[in-house]
Length: 157
Image (cartoon, rainbow, N blue to C red; front, side):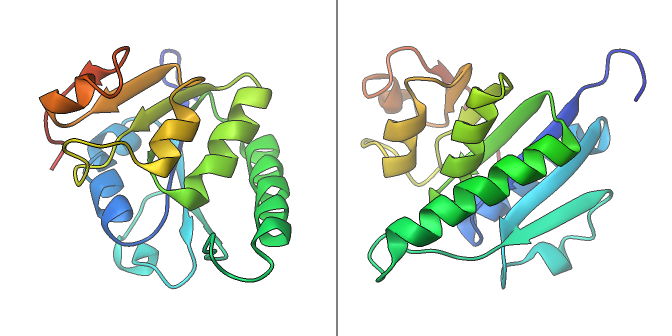
């Protein structure tokens, strides 16, 4: 890795969260980066440079969620231990939370970007990550009322 460059982990669930995360590909391409998203998502269509991982899709309302969530946390910890990123960057949602939590335990910097879809109210993942994120970004100015320590950056699309 060249001096000044960081190793970055880009993680999100599939769908719109992944589409938002892909708007940061220029940053990813400028650094030593890897990507994580859910199986069955658009990762195969993204023509990514570097390493990518897929993880099982989980739903907090499904039977056995707690077991699957714990399993995902240990998978996240394993990936982060192997890749050794300096920073975990995410647009959410549920699949990203174990990476943020494991990353924080491992003393990695956490950058959370609240989804563009949230204009006036908090997402569940945003609520969970906000207290320990090193940098919390919002894409709509009204969201600063929800997250007073956040930084408003406008849309990343």
